[in-house]
Length: 251
DNA sequence: CCCATTTGACCGTT
DNA sequence: AACGGTCAAATGGG
Image (cartoon, rainbow, N blue to C red):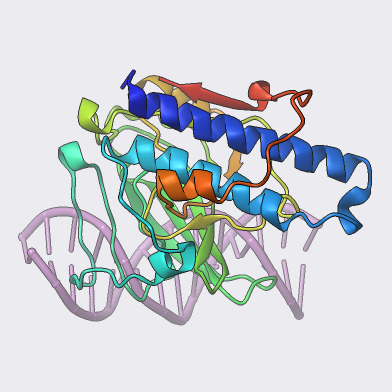
């Protein structure tokens, strides 16, 4: 995917990175009260959304509605559960479930659900489908943290040792975004949403990323490329340094 | 019948 | 005792 699309995804990421950096500076200087952070945050979120949209599909979705509209878009009515394995990856749908639809390159099996005291929403527990077969101890927790639009936090734990990751074909070739630092909610209040993948984890980089506990929160609102650039927060001072070391993209 | 989900019970930690 | 995480029987869909 070394193409125009990859270039655009990179552009979006860099833009988001610049915004994040500016936000970091604002936070550091304690200017958070005098300067509205909303445009920055939105730009960051849109950056990731756009980048993910390129990663997710070779042809970026022609979304031109707002994020919230997009989220409200009715899902095709499906049975209470649906699985798609193989080249298309695994997708779980459940309209009334607190579980966000996800496709992170692995097959997960739900093994529990709990009401958490600190949250009005339930937390769902998943483990690798091949936990027994291949002694894979990877687990993840998914918790809804916000209602409207639905926002989920996914926490990955343990390391995938299974070889059964799904979605190996190049059509859905992976780009992985690794966050070396947990992003606080102050900075990134909108986390994973339903319907799309937080992160695409596949083959080559899976073990690496699953080695660490990741509290990965990526907003997944999809916006159109043109819309994204049209709505940008004003450009940042050219002196701003990018912190690429915090976001590593894997090919 | 197989397999994934649901859900109450159980267990470990604080 | 409260809480979070896991277990496992029951359930339901394919």
